[in-house]
Image 1: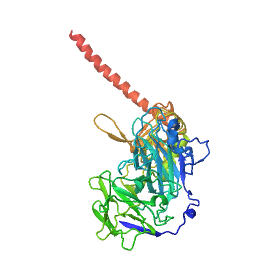
Image 2: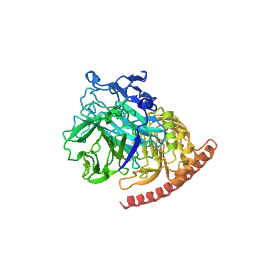
Image 3: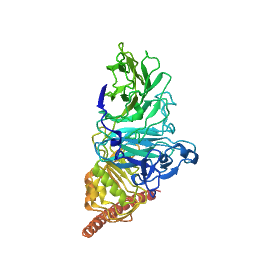
Image 4: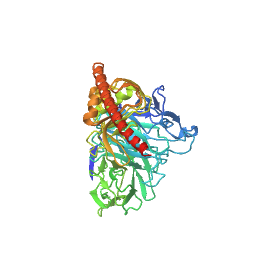
Length: 565
């Protein structure tokens, strides 16, 4: 464990100047025609999400529930069509953000059945959204346990690696994904550092007998803090006269004006929680001595995590907020995690804790789709007026029109390897941008209304291949372009014909009555016709000769049979 200290020097009013700079606050489902608004309950300005996502429909929670939630949570955007829908947000590269997605079902559809679906950040699974996301108060004090969080929100602290951040909802069953609000808050890169991935919030609590939840403007970074208490803890109040709070983590003053000590002064202060056996976690402990100690009083304790002492004889300061955390992610024993603050033998006072944050590590798969493939795919969709649901075409799940490479190395960009635009009513010519998908192995444009000629560039796309079920006994590898059942016209180029011969190219062109598959160009047409006629004539001569010869032989045989009778 390590701890970070900073003397109280920054004045709270100074810090709050332009405090919301860089905030992104989207009210999902708010009409694109509605202007941004400031919620009087939290002083945050929200705007419509319409320009950040494609598709979806607007809904509102039931009327009698509206007073329970923030205004932004009373509307929602739901996505009845398609598998995935992604928000694309402009961010600053290499900056740490708090990213929060909120979900209030509110029986908006009258079905009284909360949907289940997955939430992704980039190509990384973030959370499965289910009916546990329903407590409007985000209040830990009523739960009495750190392993029972019922909230409207899920949150991750994430460092961006490009200037675009993608948050996606992915359908996993027959229910309909939805989202109420999406928020980003920039943080200092000096806090919440993790070399092993992003940090998904499991708990963020301060110790108080109050049920008051802290958010912006009390917390300048708009982190929700829930009040927590239990029978094993005694809450003490500040009597040192401190009126300001500042350390690199910018804890809200309200969160550190109270603290917890064990009810039994000789017992350790103990907190336990459960997690998945494979999860790793980071714990952030925030301390401030709230009592004016006498000369003969002392408060010292060991910080013990999962049975291991991570900091010995620790003593909180009465003049600075101290944050202690683990640099290396920790694992729990059989999914059971424990924190103990154990009083040392020479301490006269029990251990103390002001606030705690617990995060699990979210290992981020950084690579997205190869940029040239993204540009090409978006251009192709635009040419045919198709929608992709926005976002990266391959992550977190490939677009309905695509198959993408499956890279195990997260540093290698994904490639588009299959494009299937079959049977969706395409019209116009074959888009020349298809040739920019240089790793494409399968192309299927069949059963549309495409017109125009067959482009030569298809012969140059040497990566195209297709596992084609030739028969029931085996599978053969062919190069494949399926362009059947369109309205293509004109000759087939010599290059494509050569590809058929030299590389085993299979061109599926049936159902294009205006396409001349026997010729290549007007100049070559007479030569092709003469060659074809000559070949046919030779075959006919051979057949006539064979017929005459065989006919005479059969006549003689028949005569002999008749004569014998």
